[in-house]
Structures are given as C-alpha cells and as structure tokens.
Length: 401
Image 1 (spheres, rainbow, N blue to C red):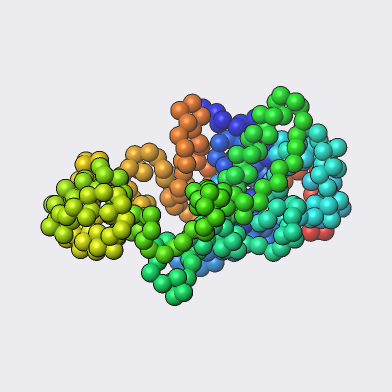
Image 2 (spheres, rainbow, N blue to C red):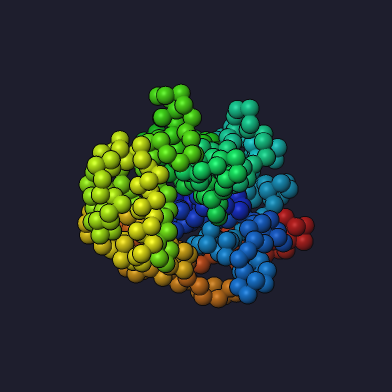
C-alpha cells in the first residue's frame, strides 16, 4: 500500500524541532524527504537527550530519532559554492523546501525567494521562524521557551492560582511551541500544494511559531476583545472546574458548571451532605460560592481512586478525565488499540517504541520507518544527480559533503 504523499519530494534544510517536525509529517505520509545536514556534525538535535543509558551518541538521540523518521540524510554545506550548486540541483526537482534559519539567511547565501522561484517556479518554500519574516521582532533571537512565554498560553499556565505574585507562569514540557509552528507550516504547505495543482505556481510560506502558539488562545483573546479585560489567572470568577484535583492515587479534571455535570458529579461522589444546599443549585450560586463547592469536591475526590472516578463518571455523562503520567499514557490500552505507538529498529540505537499515528487514514495509513544515520544517503542521492565517485571524494575532502 502506497503512502498518501508518495509523489511529493521535500528538501528539509532545518534542524532541531520546528522544521524537522514539519518534515516528519510529510515523511510519515510517504513523501521523499531529503534532510540536509552539516558535514561531520549533522542536525544539532543529534546532541540532545534523551540517550539510552544516558550516554550521548549522535545516532541515539531520542529527540532526533523521533523527529526524523522516514527521511534520507544528505550531508551538504550549501554555504560553499560547490554545495550551493548541488543544493540548487536538488531544488530544481523538488516540490517543497522546508527551512528554519533566521530571516535573511537564504538571501545571504545567494538563494533569496526570487532566485528560488526563478530556479523552480513550482517550488513551495516553507520558512519557519520564531517571529516571522517581517515585523519589528523578525530579527529577534527566539526559542521554544521564548515563543511559549510570549504567547497567551504561556501566561495562562497555570490558571486558577491563589497568589499570582508567588505562583509564576510555567512553561509546557517538551517543545510545544515549535511543534505547533511545525504542524501549522505543514498544513499551510499542503494548502500550497493544492493551489499549485490549480495554478502551476509555487509560493513562499512565512510560518512563525509565535503566531501559531498565540492562535491556541482564541477564547482568551476573544474575551479581551469583547470586554477589554485581560484574562486573569486568579481562582474564582466565571471559571468553574478547569484545574486538576487530587484523588486517592492521582489527579482528575472535571467540570461542574453545567447543571447536568453538577448533578452527575454529586451522584458520582455519593451525594455528599456538603453539596446538599440550595446555594449551589444554580450556576450563579456555584460561581459565587466556588471556594466552598471546590473544598467539598476536593475532600470527596480524595476518597476514591482515579480509575473509579473516571470510569463511573463517564457512565453518568460527566466530563471527567485522568491526569496521566508518561508511563500511564505510553502503555494505555486505548492508544495501543489505535496503533498510536510502533516499535522501530535502528541499526545503532536499537529497537524502541515511538509515537506513531497522529491520525488514521484508511486508504493510506502512515508507514513507520527509522530515522537516518548521519550522511547515510549522501552517495545515493549524489549518484542520482550524476555526481561521479571521484567528484564525491573531492567534495568530501573539501568538507562540502
């Protein structure tokens, strides 16, 4: 069975998270993704943990192995004239170029978008940056941490605090903002592919990670637009629920704003006496007495295990869910049933379980494949371009490949 994107050719000149995550989404769906890596060192993600047994190795980084499944690795330095010539030959036959260098980098190496468009009018160029190609902050240095912190989501984590002066905003674990930027860029690139099918023309996609992250906070932005009042992280007000509450063996999230939810929660908890009052019979009453309602609910939840609360609560129609640890999610039967994980063997790193399907496609499901070793496909790709073995040796000696 073929992949959904078998006929798409992608050149990925990017490293770390945002660009490679974008390229991974194409590779997992069958596209031929050629990853350009610096000769000798490769993508800097190769030096980032985790590593098996905590021993650094360029072929064993868990970050790199996940972000680069199904790609081919070509070691090449496009900043050198001979490297630029090979880079151009690759782009002449490519559908998409993914890059996440600072704005102006392609101009500096002699490959501005105008030149790329003249070289291949059908080429779609995807430029992923922290803040975009234009605007006052376009030249700012950025990172996942900065993009997250500057987004509304960054300030709003955590919500429902009692003392905002002493309970600082927190960052999300991992690289959430860069992943959002990469996924947003991949979706935009596919839209550009459809546009090209209609017009024959490629285009340049400016995909800032900051804007992708800001756009996950539409409710808070809309509320500010309507009222002019900034979102508050303080407990109380119109927010009911929306925080993890401890139970006997973990945490759960549940809501009790809607009447049906409140009644279901009361039943789940055995109709505790503390909630048996007319003061809590309306949403307004529950909001005005949120501290009292919450205290009773917290006390009752601590009498039960997470599995009981979630299973029985769902049967009652209650919106309730567990707060899982990594271990609980990685071995969860629901995710296993949906083939959300797959074991992939790598000749150096060994066999490990990877997150696999983000979506399910019945006709063209994602195909699991390992990440490449540094420069593994260099000779193969250059041979396809007609570069002789002797020329490859010369280029290797000059650190071009």
